[in-house]
Image 1 (cartoon, helix red, strand yellow):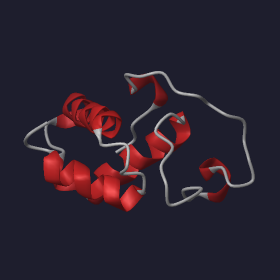
Image 2: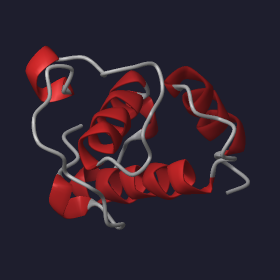
Image 3: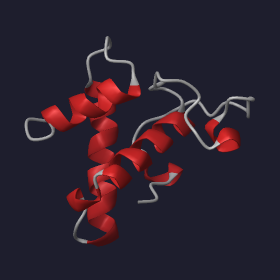
Image 4: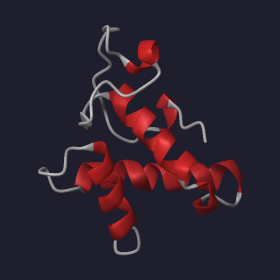
Length: 98
């Protein structure tokens, strides 16, 4: 799924390219997700949903709705959950109750 900047619901910082920027390296810049950095959030959501493609059915509008739910859950996750893998697990575990 290709979730785009225009689909985001919250405001983010969009820092300049750094040597570890995911747009340059093609991979996350660390194991921790900066929840306020737009490029990291976009990459996290896209990869999260790509790994769980069966969750997405019903076309583009449904996919955007699901991606926006993931975005809201990223913001709602407890602050001590900072690593990408832990955040993915938290989103999955709390999907039905959120």
